[in-house]
Image (cartoon, rainbow, N blue to C red; front, top):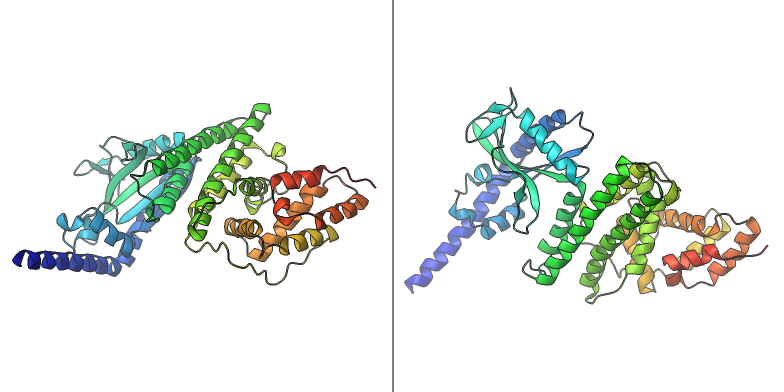
Length: 422
């Protein structure tokens, strides 16, 4: 009986610890944000002239994340609740992002050069700044999953307090992979990291990302020739694999059984690489893949990956009705035929509905704008090089097409290749 009472008391103490630590975190959140902003400002100044640098970002751990980590790592055994946010290594997390895997080492070398003032505990600082990094530990570290990462412990002295933080250096593909790993596995209670299949799947995705990194690096460093076009095709195939993997799992989670959307993912990737808002950001709206420079093509892929890794997928509305308000207004008769055919099935055909939910989730405008962009793209794909009279006949063919087949890349190519006579 006494043993049971002691057990209950221990459990209550742990929950009290968790709530107290979370309360301290919320109380100090503004201070932690100011500390993180100081670190970010210093790093932005340090890398201002480094082309390989993409961005400096930070995050302050959320209360829920802190609670989970307290239990998962038994932090209540290591720190007092009052001191946890100061003494834990990653209450503040800062990330240096670079373009390529090879650039991670370059960014780390800049840290070693700039943090040259010796401090205590193996830490060094920038002259005149109270921001310290522990640079005497071997880098990159090897994680539990066997992959390497540049992860450096540091601290900031402010107002008589010492605030620990964690600094990571990640290429865009590594950032993308870790975000997707977190969304697909750590936030999905059905998946466990001990699951061999899931591990193998994630490692396969990581391998594909490493290949993307290598291919894009080559595209950045040389003008595209015949071999370069082959690299683009490989990158497109791998982007297709990633989009298909992410969204097929989301669809399965929502409807309760697996669905093959690979062919629809292929059509989405073609749109993304040729016409989407991602291409317009790279300065190549309506360019064909063969006319895209290596750097602009790579920037498109990076933009898509950044979009995917920053998404919150919890409210992915597959299966729900799609309402476009205000209604889409086509500019040509062919656009009207395309729009009407797709809209006729958007809420009654599973694949059409799913395609556009994925499409709207991936694109960055509102749904009506995105739909208009897709219809314009569709017209561009099937009507290029055709006369006005041929476009009229093509419109008749569209009106007789099956909407779900229209959305497949094979369906688009079939319409585009038709030899319609005057």
